Length: 154
Image 1 (cartoon, rainbow, N blue to C red):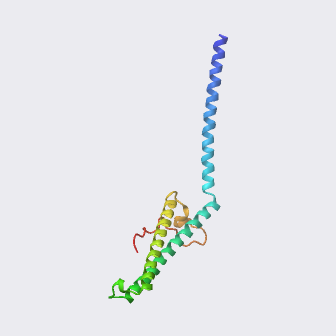
Image 2 (image 1 turned 90 degrees about the horizontal axis):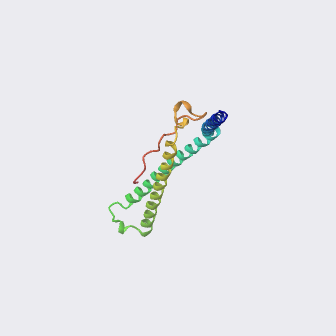
Image 3 (image 1 turned 135 degrees about the horizontal axis):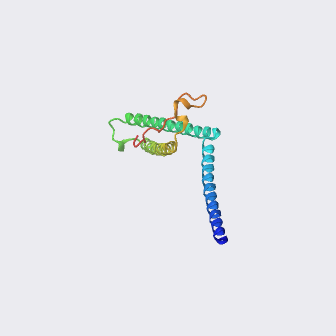
């Protein structure tokens, strides 16, 4: 009878230890999830992320403006040689035109890369600063949830 009692107590002890281990793991996961949420919602970190998005949005706007400047230069040069075949243009003007075309292609590629990075980062989580009611002090309008469509040509 004593042996049965010892076996029973051993089984109860094992069940209690296993149960405690499972509960400990569960509490550990909850604690880790809470720590991650606290870290990601830390006001200093959110401000840093907001500033990154704001800077990238401004940089994308600048790149689009640069493309417009290049377009006007290219158009102006084309108008100055209107009715003339490109092979008959002055050599330095042809070189300059080709250089501007290469530069605008680089700016467009850079814009597309930056817009893709912005869109990917913005889609990862619903940042409060993209909502009108949750803007930081001094911000007048929310950041776009997605940058304009990618520029494929100029």
